[in-house]
Length: 272
Ligand code: GLU
Image (tube, rainbow, N blue to C red):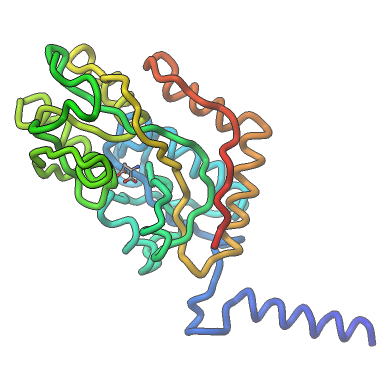
């Protein structure tokens, strides 16, 4: 009898996990056989596409370590997750989760859920080495600043700080770096982790102003309905701090860039 009740309960649990609700839309990433993960293709140190399906960087390594814990043995496939496409990739379930310099914001939280943060970056400013007029965010007044669609960074300057800048569209941060190099913009302002990766790659051409002015809590984006998956990722992040993996990966990718790295476990946001 007891066994039969237990079996019945198991069946209910299995049905719930499979998401018998809205057209199977409630399914979780936990234990999946294949995981599709969105990362950046063009941000040195964080996510770079080497060739079709092969990516490298801190976010890519974090994604692999998390995948190994939430869906052990799963086949992992990486795809591009540009700033402007992240929410829609998750909402349409084209990806299972996203690890792509993705700041947790109240606005994004209305569309997707976030595990983490797994790192707290800070927005800073990158200029050409010979620039002397830009020492902090207020000095961007009247200057040209690269704007990447779907990214929070330009909003932090123009809308949140109220600094009137001349915005010049860039397709991505690598495009912004090209525009900074050839004089089409005076500055690129975004997370220090992103800027440090580019500055290290580009040798002596640029300098980071070193005037951090925000906290960018990097989350792992996941479908809004997958609370189970989000909680499993949070558990994985905790374990990856406890066993030293995340501090080690930060060192692997950013040691020697001059960036001041924090290796304490960030305060989690909670999955809802
Ligand atoms: N962390 C910021 C954001 O999520 C800037 C970097 C990016 O766009 O990937 O918008």
